[in-house]
Length: 233
Image (cartoon, rainbow, N blue to C red; front, top):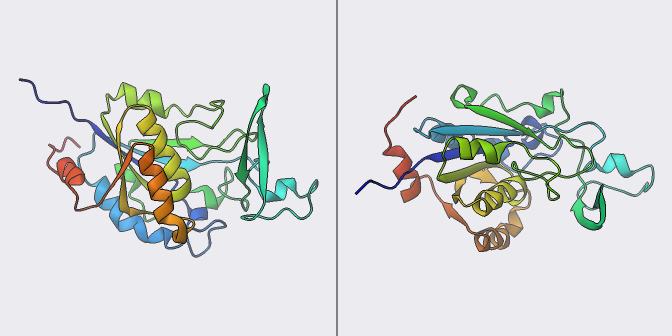
C-alpha cells in the first residue's frame, strides 16, 4: 500500500520590525524572542517555507490617524471602525484601529534581520488594499484581496500547514483558521509565536481550536515528523 502523502508548509507570519520591540510602532510583547525558534524550524526540511508581510499603503483603513479628521477622539488600540463592502453595503464588520505600521517602503515593514530569509522560498505581501483590514495571509474578510497563498499551497500539493510568527491573536490566528478552512491539517507552534494581548491568550486559543486548528510545540510529534523527512534543500 502506498504511504500517505505528506507535504508540510511552514508559514512565518508578519515577523517585521514594526511588530517587534524595542522600536516597533505596534510591538508585540517579546515578539523578537521567537527568532531562534523560527530559524530552527526554517532549518527543517519543509518542502515549502513562506514568509508574509503586512504591506500597507499610507491611507490604510486600519490606521487610527486616518480617521481622526472625522473623529478627533479616535485612538489606536481602543477605537474601532466599521468597514463596509465597497459593492455590497449589507456586508460589514467592525475592526480595531491601530497605530501606523508596516507602511510600504518604510523600515518598519521590513522582515527582522534575525530571520534567516535565505531559507524562505516565497514572500507574500498582504494588506495592500487601503479599504479593508487583512489579518489573514490568504484573503480579507470580503475576499476582495487574494494574496495568492491558497493557489501556491495547491500548486505545491501541500497537505499540512504550520503557522508561526506575529501575532498569535490576530494575523497568526486568521491565517491558521483560513488554512484549516481550506482543508489543511493546521498547527500553530507555541514557542514560535506571541500574542498582542497575553492575558487573553487562553481564551483566544480555545476559539482558534474550535475552528479546526491544533496547537503543538517544538518537541511535539508533528514537528518530529517534519524532522524525519529527507532534506532536499
